[in-house]
Structure formats: C-alpha cells, structure tokens
Image (cartoon, rainbow, N blue to C red; front, side, top):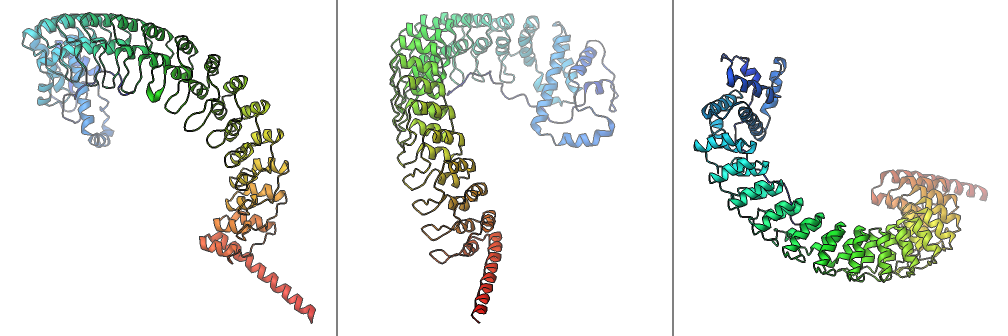
Length: 634
C-alpha cells in the first residue's frame, strides 16, 4: 500500500534544558539544602499532588548518588528534554486539576512555582507556560469557563503547542463545548501545522458533534493532510457513517484520492464497511477508480472476503474483470485468499475464470497456490482449464499443487482429468514437482492416478533423481515400489545414486542400494557415486557404499580414484576411510598427479601428513617385497 492511515503526528516538543530533576517531594520538604518554606493552601496542594504524580525515578539514596549522577550525565540531551517536558506536563495538569477558573494569575504563578520546584530554568517555563499553552490544555480537558477567561485575557487561541492548536486538541478529545467556544472566538478551523486539520482529528476519533461544529464554522472538509487523506478517508476507514454523512452534506469530495490514489470507496471496501460504501455509492462515488497500483474497490472487497461490499459494488456496475495489480482480476484475489463466497458472486456476475495475469496465471493457478481446494472446485465447475500453462514457467495448476504439497487441490485436479504428465518449460511433470519437494502424499496420489514414474525432464532426470538429490528417502521408496528404475541415467550419465552421493544423502543411498542399483557405474566423466561422496566429503554416504562393497579403486576419465578427489578437496576423514578399505592411495592420474601431490597443491596439511605416511608405508612394503624377491633369486 502506497500510503497508510495513521495517528495524527505531534510536532517537535517544546525544548527544555537537560539536567538532573530532583523530585518535588525533596524540594517541597526542604531536602537537599533548600531553606524555602513549604507552600501552603492551594499552591501547597498543587505541589503535594505534583510530588505524587511526578515523583522522579532519579531520587536516590545518598550511598548511590555518585554512581547515579555519572549515569545521568551520560543521558543524551534528547532524553533530558523529554524528561523535563513530561515533568512540566504533569505540573500544568496538576494546576488545572486543583485551581478554579477565578484566578488566572494565581494559576499561572502556581504553575511557575511547580515548574521551578522541578529545577526547570526560567527561560524554559516562561516559554512553556505562557497563557496560550494553558488554552491548549484547557481545550483538551473541556474546561470551557477557564478557556473563556483565557480568551478574555488575550490568549492566542491559534498558537501551536506540540504541533497542535487548542482547536486541534478539542476536536481530538471530543470536547464539543470547548471547540464551540474556540470557534466562536475566531479560531482557525483549517489550521494544519502537521498536515492535519481539526476536521481530520474529529473524523479520526469519531467525534461527529465536533465535526458538526467545525462545519458550522466553515471548516474545509476537503483539505488533505500530508499523505493526501481528507476527513472523508478517515470516516471511511473508521466506518463512521455519521461523520461521512456530515461531510457529504458539507460538500465533501467522495472521489478524493490520497497520495497513493486511494479513494474513500476503496478504503471502505478494504475494511468491509458496507454502510459507508452504500453511502458513497448513493453519493455517486466512482466505485471503479483504481489506486496508483491498479487496485479497485472490487479487487479490495474480493481479496479481503467482504462479500456484502462486493455485491454492493457489482450492483453499482463495477467491472468484475478489471485487471489490477500485475494484471490480476478480482477472481484472482478471491481465489488466492480463499474466499469461495466472493468467488461465486464474481462468477455469477460474469467473471472470466480463464482470465490471466501478466505471468499467464489463471485464477485456478492462484487457488492451487493458496491451497484453496474449495475455490479451485468452484473454478473447475465453472469451466476453468486445469491444463493451462503459465507463460514463463509452463506450470499448470497440477504442477503448482504438487510442488506446494496441496494434496486436496491435487485431488480436485485429478478428479477433473488434469494431464498428470504435462511438463513445464524444463520438462518437470507434477511427479517431478512433488518429488523434488518431498511431498509424499502428493507423490502417492499421482502414482495411484497413473503418473509416469520414469519420465525424464529436459535433462533426462526422472522423479527418482529429484527425490534422491534432495534427500527424500520416503518419496524415493514410493517411486521404486511403483516401478522407478534406480539405474535410469540422465543426459550426463548420472543415476539417482550420483546426486544422492554428491549431496551426502546416505538415507537415499541405502534405499537405492537395497533396490539393486549399479554401484560402480560411472557417469559421462567416469565418476562413480563413490567418487562423488569422497570428493564432497560425505563420510556417511561413503560408509553406505563401502558396506555395499563398492570398488574404491575405479578411475574416472582423468585416471583419478576416489582418493584423488578426497585429497584435492581436503577431506582427511574420507581418506582415512579409504585407507581402511585398502584403497590405492599412491596411484598417479593421467597427468602423473598422486593424491599426495594434489593435497600439497591445495594446502591441505592433514591430508598431506596422512598421505606422506601412506607413501612411506608403501615404500617400505615395496622395499620388503624387493628384498624378498632378491633373496629368492639368490
């Protein structure tokens, strides 16, 4: 969403100097060396209450003063300003609670006294507690008599405090009488220091009586905030029919667009506010206007499952086949999110079940992607083509369901007669898709429905290759039980055992060995599964192959044995296993390189040490044989 509804922002707070703020209780009681007499009467009551309300967490025992002072000095200036502001706010709030409105001067003086008791500097409290700031707080608390006296005393009722004027504060807090006093005194009802007018606040907080007062005094109901939202957008968002009715009567633009292009109708449809949406339709709002991304109210209602809103929009003439974001029509939105009621409404209104997005995907693709079998069944019953392939991937709904493990969707497609052997752009069928992700139920369902278990993709890989390469032994076992050829070779001459060994899937190798795979078969480079396991350092895979009596000395097309691959890759444990199985560790390849020379080239110290020892032992054995031979000749 390009823009969003949010709480009205506050402007920068009044700046107060950072520093230590002793508690009111400490100052009022004469602690800390203070010789001032504790105030009595109203002032004393204010200070006592403020002591309880604003007791500072920075009051410490004498034993910890030094450490705590050092910590306070490390506090950032911003934290200090916020703390001072909070303390000062409590002081003024306490003043308004305890003082009547018959003595403005006394109220002002007591607030200054409370502020001083919290160690705020004179410049700070003079700036913060001017008469106009009392107007802000009085408006927010609905103190109409006090507010009237402030106005008579000359308070600037349009002065901004923390980004708001008294009018903003009254509208936000729902203080209708205070708002009327301000408006009657000439307050600016359209002031928008933070982008929000008082009308925005009234609609955001659902204060319809405040909104009526503002409209009465000439408020601009179409003024937008910084994100382009008008009061009508907030009324639509909150589902406040009274506010919207007031706005429409005052001439609100029902087609106003936010910075992201969203209209009140789009917002109402998104949140399921049927009453609001009907009011907008009755006010002749354009219910087909899309936002900047192409989403219309119909898309929003369908995608959020708001069936009643969807019906209102259709009855108002909305196009149910309007392409939106990425070419999606409303049926795509309802299908992927799983709203069958909305999908039925759309189909009954003439929605095209074969509509495609920019990728060529139909609502059936979306339903299977979301795992929504009921929606898929609705689409199938409405005539959706279950074999339609996407443009760029070639995926059918069947491939999508199998690849994501949505077995119920797959069952719907099987029952609908989907082609289970249709390949995508790389030749993968639904069985490939299910096998590569390890979805056993889907694999079993496809096998029972007649899917070809030995069908190769564009590279000749069978579903068994896919399962073995990703370590899904149970899927592999099901495929073998259904007749999968464990010795089937792809275009590179690899059997399923080759990728299983290369990726270290010992569990799959056990299944393949038990099924009678050709243990010593080499691929087009002459590499056996043992070569792959040793080169990639998979000891468990090697152990399975060794126990199956695989030949450890077979050479590939370069004349290299599994020991060459292990040494070149620095897999010392694999070398130790090969040594235990009497592998030839000193044989040179076609270029004259031994495992030892390859280990040295790679800087594999442990391998070099092991192979040096092996070479030494081999030399000693050779010498012994030579001596024995010479002795026999003598």
